[in-house]
Length: 375
Image 1 (cartoon, rainbow, N blue to C red):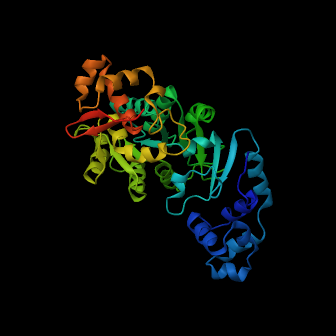
Image 2: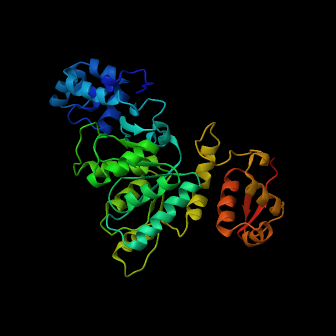
Image 3: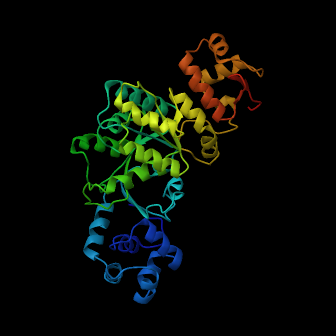
């Protein structure tokens, strides 16, 4: 476990484990005192003036050292991490939400948390069609270089994680401690995710799946992502809570429409009426996220397979160079590009979006594309 924060981890643990001290209170205390250590060193009178109750003050003055040591022992295991709010590895996307979790408990590759993510959520009892739609979106979004995240629940969550693992990596946001798996039937899936992706929770080791944990988990799912896709959901669904968290956090929300006879399509239809974007393909999602992805791609390291903006065409793969050669600098429709290049339609659609993100291609009115003068 690598800790890059200048504040000792046990100071953070003493702070967040005090009764009644949640993310909002931690934010207020840090704004007032400056650091967890300063909070612990403050007098009872100052802590009372800051709004803390007697049980919280008592816990801060006499921290549960045995509990803290147990958490630190968990974090000493291979591939286990505790990320504090000031740790450089703490995902910037999540830090932007109101009252972000002060600590994240992570199993797997913590660096993945900062990569561009799309959350896929939905019903715990999806139809066969809902499962197939979810598999298709998860595979294609992973192929486009996005990390698929979800909540490890039964149904759509499990399908999304499994499909993403077929093509790459995935992120599971837990409503338990990082050493617990809920539901138990997903224990093998959780192991696979920890090996090839990452499990993350704001709840410390040992925490069981309590009902009030899951709305907090949903806020993390949306907070980590650039957008949330709901593939199938009933009107009263935790997936809709995640989608509404996303809207409050300024994230994009996408919904797949379905039959009016399918009760599990009603949640998606409700979201669309409320302003979610109706989507029928992964390419539509990538096109909507393109402005956000461009800013991510402009960073020194992105962790994705999408070429950086302005990268020379010499560094592109053979099919991408073939498509650029077929395009020229005059606007051309995708159908014409398919005919000129001889490449499959789905491959052309994928490459056009990737090349647009990397600055090699620009879209023009009428659904046409032209080559930019780079490389």
